[in-house]
Length: 52
Image (cartoon, rainbow, N blue to C red; front, side):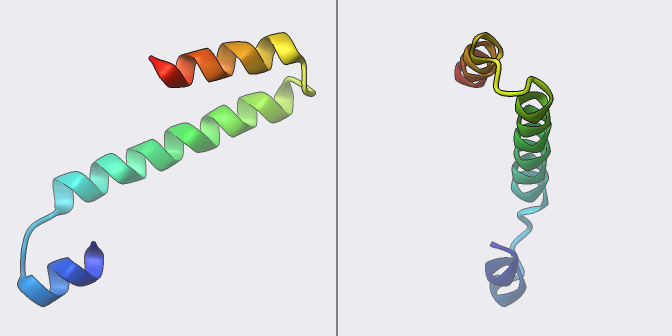
């Protein structure tokens, strides 16, 4: 996407920001999972959060 923006001079900054936000949210969820020490009830809650 960044390369496409450079080639066409399109402004995709809002979409790039959204994707970066999604990446940070996924990283936070992975941190929650790691901190839960694979407690499966916590895993279920994390997965349910991802579906909403």
